Length: 141
Image (cartoon, rainbow, N blue to C red; front, side, top):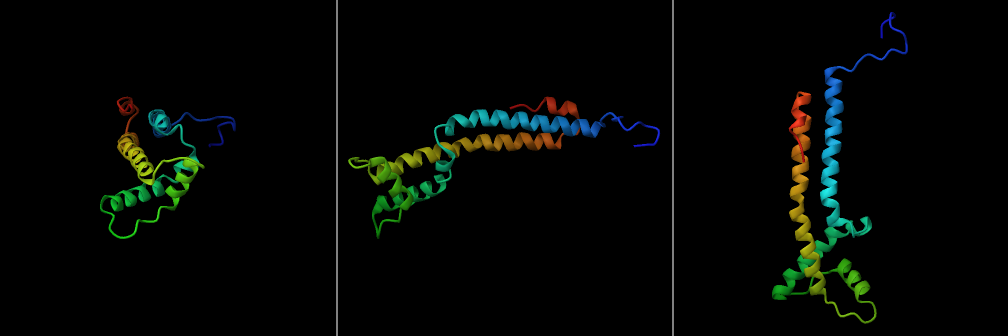
């Protein structure tokens, strides 16, 4: 700030600052659209349960591989065993195979949905590479 400008004076934004602001807004817009499309896939699952999905899938895949030929001992499935105990309660009849199949069906659906993650990443990259405000107009979900 020069001595001739009052302390309350705010200079206009530069073209680079305007572009950075527009890029941030566009990325927020893209992330919002991504979230809106993915949220229905996970809305019924609490976050704490989502944190076990990797373990559930790994155990289910190991169990189903073993189940196909039943060679050797069955793999350890402590996460699925506990889920199954909770699902069955005192008189349920769901089997580890049935639970594993359900887990794998969900895992496969979520894996396919990762195309949306890739799309979000591609669009964000395009936004970050934009050199002019006008270029941002062509980037949409």
